[in-house]
Image 1 (cartoon, helix red, strand yellow):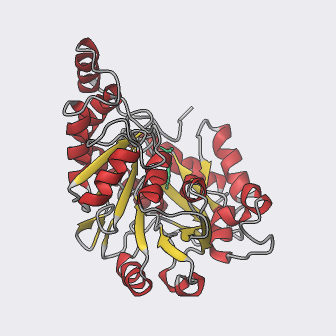
Image 2 (cartoon, protein in one colour):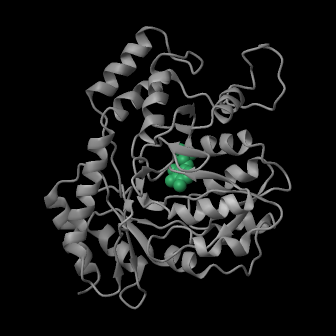
Image 3 (cartoon, helix red, strand yellow):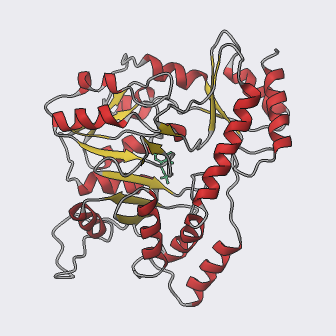
Length: 371
Ligand SMILES: *Cc1c(COP(=O)(O)O)cnc(C)c1O
């Protein structure tokens, strides 16, 4: 079976974990060791000054929302086509996610659809750089300035990506990373909040550690959380960060091998790279027009040949959890994200896949389309 993703864990990861373990540095409260190095490396990779580790991408987003003081009655704009964690993070604070439609070229939020969703209660927007392609951030930032909104970049899928020469994650007020096993850089489970704002970083560092403060340790003025990543996981993260450029180059190479072999099929949409963007191709994703072939039958035919694939995200505005909570109307229509959710899939995207395997997958894909 060719799986959709395998991580690249090497000897350095093992050596750093063992080093941390042998010295008893296994918790999440010891600073200045691998945790501090990991925070510095990952923050720098987003061109930010501060990094605060968390237990996951989900808790990094929740920490971002909490650190900005968002609460019940506030509305936060999020794309419909994203990992469900983006919207859950908003709900954990009692705030309300409001879903935005996608554009059909990059599959990211369509900045032209933002203005119509802003209300007097809107406090923030979470652009998500979906499948590795950066959001068109200039219009997002200028609308955010116009309406006084915070911008939290969900950079879980675009770690190392660039928008007009700037790193994603460092353009908004806060960026959030995930280090889940299939992300650009992994610690198994893990996440990080990155920012250039020292007050936000300090608040986040306090809230993720149960609200202990440096001044008067046992006096708590805020509702805190335990979102502490262990130093053992940070040790894996340091080893991964030391090779992030190689990991991204391999993903870009994989994408260009796929694109070379699959381009020119009418009705098949391949991932793009806009002239202003550097795409890190988190997953090599495709959209099939229904007239070309049914996505589900293509996936079945590939599976029969031992090739694992995954569907695109199921649009959030259609998720039972949000409909049952009354967050979104049952008849809400966001047609671009619905069509992407129905017709998108991604192919095996491990950075180390050999060229022969790409040939095999692309031949199987073409025959699954019955071309
Ligand atoms: C993976 C992912 C998350 C959640 O990260 P976890 O580490 O799995 O909690 C959030 N947003 C996006 C866009 C993701 O891809």
